[in-house]
Every structure is written in structure tokens, then in C-alpha cells.
Length: 212
Length: 212
DNA sequence: ACTTGATTCAAACGAACGTTTGAATTATTG
DNA sequence: CAATAATTCAAACGTTCGTTTGAATCAAGT
Image: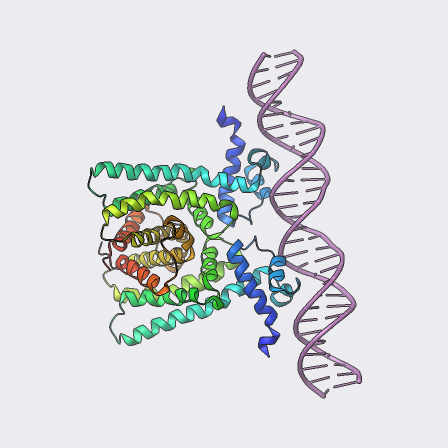
């Protein structure tokens, strides 16, 4: 019953995801969204109350299962490692793989959602501050603890910094792949996702392990 | 004569920089800008013709001297190295130092401008596509050539990827330092810029040199 | 001092925005 | 089938936006 009753909601969320990723938050009007979703203009306010709430709903729809997948992967790697520290590469894989796999699944938002994440951090709309805090800052702590066990020679703040740098390298690389395609004159593309994942993990693992 | 004649233009540019960095492109109205700059509303259209042109002018004002400083630094390091390849750390320093030094100079835009750069990449307004191409993609080629000389064991596409990853790590780290401050519960801050620069260069140099 | 060009100003323009309304339509339930 | 709830719809609301206008003010040159 729920899938037919909320067909309108899903259509709105899909259209919002696509249009906001393409044009930004404020530049995407409810009229453009409802036209693309082929629903009435007032449907947004009826189902989501307000535009800001629609944006938050669109983001959390992808964000929640994504973070759950990342934590589940980290759990699995920690179980596999018994009481040994998890390899840095596996921690990074738990962080990155669920996001990379979004690219291959257009039904799950595809590359649009990665652009939205970057947009979330850059566009400082007040209404999504708590969302960034919940979904970014808090979830990072689990990975920070795992990293400290795997890299005990690093100080607490150094570990925070390097995790921040690794996250930035990844997010920028995949969310703004257009810049890479431009500067490489089309020689670098996001086609083979497994190869891309390995490349990024390799780069970040070396950075995390750097002695100095 | 120019400084008094264009005092209005500068006031508008400063206010635009501050407000757009705080609220985003579309969310910042000309009325808010002119009110903050204490000039008349019509002054924007008189001096910059249109809002989009104002945004481009605001960005290029900082972007041009920044890129000139980066290329000048790279030139200097290449001269210092005679015919030897430049150390990876120096290439990264030429890339990053002029940007980090912005943070310490609030008169040059401070941290606002770094947020604007991230916003430029995330918010895909059509009118600043050519700016991103000119100032990001094209200027990267010089650094790509320098890297290829210093890391001849890397393939052409691998070098492009790693330069992209290093740029992303840096830009994310400094532009979204708020996230780091949050997740580290305030233990990591952007106070000592020289130490931050060294940290980022160290991380990225290790990633660039990674053998695999 | 007068003229010419550059700049500032208050006021208004039409367009687009998010949101609300109340009736029409559809679905669900007793 | 009747009644009740949920959803859709066209239309309009008030607000804010970027831009334009034409007169007022200022600066500079002869």
C-alpha cells in the first residue's frame, strides 16, 4: 500500500535530487521540481510541508542507508581481524566503498548524490547544519577510533587531521570528477569504479601512514 | 584617483565576498549586499551591469593574483633546482602556500575566499563554468608537468588522478575546517597556518609517492 | 562660472518565488 | 453504498528578487 500511496513523494524526491544536484539548492524552484516530477505544485507542501524540509528529506533518504552500510562494513572488517587492528586500507574501504557503489546504481541516486554531499558542505544553509553534524561529524568518530588502533604512532589530533584529509581527497575526487576530466583532457574518467576505489584508497593509505 | 573613484566598487566586492561565502550565491540578494556595503541598490548594476558579472568579478579579483603567485613560486622552485626535478613537497608548496597565506590576511578575503572556491565547484551555476575551466583546469597543467618530471615512475593518468586527489584533500581540509573542528570536538583548529601547511603537504607527498 | 560627463539616489517595474486556500477528486472504511 | 479521510488540483496570495528609469548630485575641464 505504501508504495502506491507515496508514489508522489518518491517522484518528488527523485526530481529534487536530480535538479538540485544540477543547479543547486536555491536555484531549483518548486515549480521546476513539480513539473519534472509531473505532480501538482502544492504536492510539495502537502507531503513535505516546506521546501527546506523537502531538501532535508531528500538528503536523509540516501544518507541513512549509506552510513549504515559504512558502519556495517567496518564492523565486518573488525570481526574478520579478530583482536588485531584493521588494516588502514580496509578502514578506508569501509568509508569509501558504499559511496563509490552509488555511482554504479543510478536508481540509488548515482553521481548526483555525491555532488549533493559536496554541495551540503559548501552551501551553508542554516537548516542543514544539524544534518551535516549528525551525518558527517558524529559518524566520523567510529572511523577515528579504528584508525587510532591501526596507527598508534599518530597523535590524536594528527589522526583527526589525516582522516579529514582522506575524506576530502575522496569526496572532491568523485564529486568533482568533471574537473579531473577537464584538466586531463578526457583521459581520466569515472568508468571503472573498482579501479577508482583502489586508486583512492592507495593514495590515502600512503598519506595516513606517512611517518613525519 | 582610481582608489577614490572606485571606492564603491571595492565596497561592493568586499560585501559580496563576505555575504556569499556565508550564505551562497543565490541566497545572497543585491539588496543585502548594497545594504552591507552602504551603497545604493542601483550601484551594482551601474558598476557591474549584472549580478552574475558581479560574482565573476568578485572571484577573479582574488583568483588572478593567487594563480600568479602559485606559478611564480613554482618557477622559483624550478630555478632553484637547476635542471633537477623539483621535490614533490615543493610542488605542493607552490600549489598550497599562496592559498594558506590568504587565511592569515583578512584584508585579502581570509577564509571566506576558500569557502567560495569550494562553492564554485559545488554549485554549478552556468555562468562560472568558463571561470572554473580557466582558473582550475588550465592552471593545473603546469603542475602536472612538474609532477611528471619528479615522479617519472607514474603514468600520465595516474599523475592526473593523484594531483586531483591532492588538490581535493587540501581544498576540503581548509575550506571545510568547520567539519574537522566539529568531529574533533575543537581539538583541531586552523590557527597555526605554517603547521597546517606542513601537515597537508606531508600527507599529500606520501600519497603522491605511493608505489602501487 | 558654466558645461560636460560620471556617479548616486529614490522609486518603480515585471517576473518568479514559496506558500495557502478551498473545492474537486480519489481512496478507504464501516 | 454511503461516509469519511486522504490526496490532487487550479488559482491566487503576499513577498522578494534583479533590473531599469530619470532626476539629482558630484567632479573635472575649459
